[in-house]
Figure 1: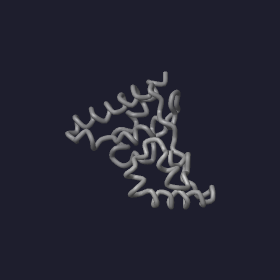
Figure 2: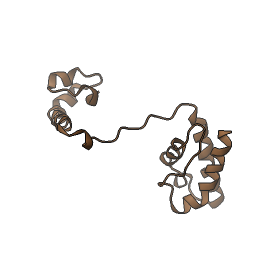
Figure 3: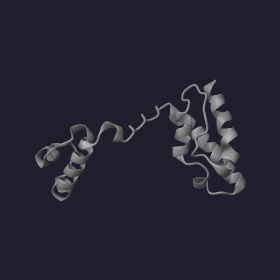
Length: 129
C-alpha cells in the first residue's frame, strides 16, 4: 500500500488500509521521508520488481523436490534443514516451470550441487512429462 499510494502527509498515511495509528504516530515522519526519497530516484535506480509467486500447482512439485533433500539427509545423517532451502528450490522451479527445461540456480553450490543437482533435474524432467 505504501509503494502504491505513496502518501505525502500523515493524514494520507493514516488512511491506508492496515496502517496502525501507533505506526503513524511513532514512525510516520520517517516513513514519509523514505517515500519522498524513493519518489525522487530516477527509474534506473529503482529496485527490481519481485517475481510473481509460483502457482498453487507448483507446491506439489516443490514437495517432491524437498523429499530428495530429506532422503539424502537421512542417508548421510545430515539435518534436513541443512540440505535444501526453499528459496533455492523455488529458484530452480522458476527457471522452467511448468514444462522445462530447468537449470540449477547459482545459489545451489558446492557439495549440495554435487550431491543433489542431477537428482533434482531428473525429478523435474520426469514431472514435466
